Image (cartoon, rainbow, N blue to C red; front, side, top):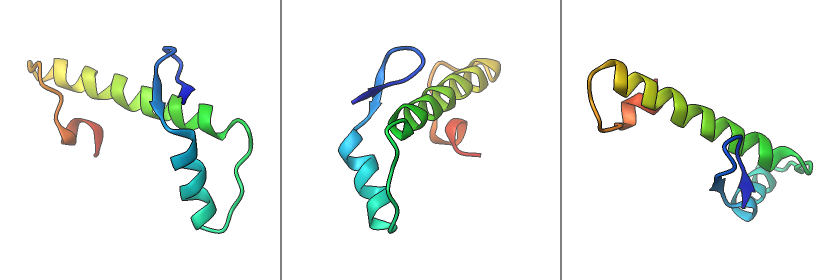
Length: 65
């Protein structure tokens, strides 16, 4: 798995590459790192939103929308 900006691994390389391939496209070598970075950023933002709302439980709507 590729590592995000925190060094954590969030995505499976094969799954990301398969999803891109199924849409008829190829993926470059840096696409996994970019997807991982996007996931890490989404998590960071969700935690900020959760904290701002006085909660300790991150919910789906903290990430989407």
